[in-house]
Image (cartoon, rainbow, N blue to C red; front, top):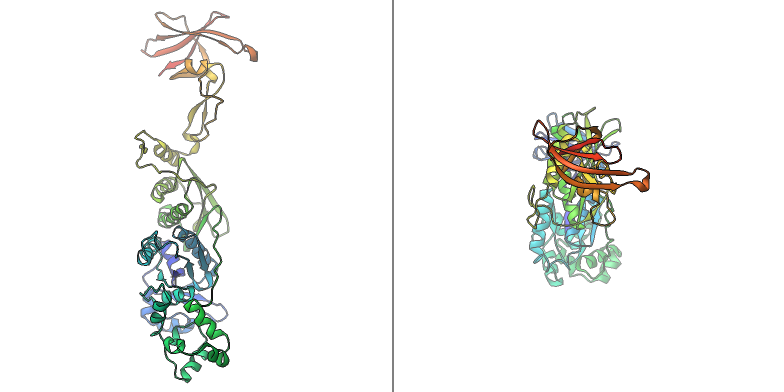
Length: 471
């Protein structure tokens, strides 16, 4: 299967929601400027790829002219190649021709035939904002040809392929114009005319190039294709044609990057718990933002909601010229949460709620208490981030943890008067091995405000201390 993306550079502008309706031209070759591509408004006025830029400007009234950036286009193509790995493990991007080849012979049964597979590939790319032309054939060379022509046939065997190619004109072949003219000179007009000629005679007259092309089209000459290997830690890059000064305008391009991320993570059966977003500026500086969830995930809409909250709190120091989204670490895939507080087993999961709080308030504003092995209640728990939960050797709770329970204590301890009516909780002894011998009798008593005070008597001094309040 050949996936041809003739308007890849223009499609990249769609990712930023900045593609204008007025005529737009992408110009290449600064030495002799010419048109690389043009949008529909410019094409309707007669502009065509390869036309001299001066001729294009003569037929348009004040068009937008942007420089074509091959490196940015190549990055987009490689990103799409990684996305298409979900359909086959053998993908070969051809950056120079803005095309991706897929070996799909082993995938046809899984995806229920070539037609269904083409539909899924096309839907995936269109969802990401690209306009593909897809061709499927028995050989890579024939698939390239059919994709470029938007030919609906899918010849998967040799005889069907010959019948499909026979009525096509010779001008569709990837041959120099001189060779096409020479073939016309001996009366050949269509590929079928060429296929009927002996290979030996073609070699004597035109050399080995033309017979080799025919053999590659029909599959008589193998064409090995290198395998594309995606990077271990994916990153997604997007350049704007105009600077963005408001964070609200970043939502649309960020959504496109997150959709690419979701498709790429699906390929490798991965999820991620943390993302890094770089806001690229004109002076080659970047504003770096990180966003971490309590539970890993891959769905674009979930990440987009959190990033929207984070960006709404941000004041841009300078306008933004591009975005770069990076994944610091890939994690094994699992089932994403179906709801805000639900898991697949029906239990509650507050990871989405905590992620929203952290996105709005900041990572340092949302903490949890983690148990420790300290013998005293005031040291039995420590505040840490939602994801920095220390592991303890064993699951049994220490006496201090059992005494602490759901109490909310104060630091430092405060002197308390001897209690009136109270309920004894028990005695705690420990700390002698660390030089801090403690012997305490704990009790609960109500104060004048009706609060349940958590107090203890120091058996060494006989003084009463307020540990905190029972909550």
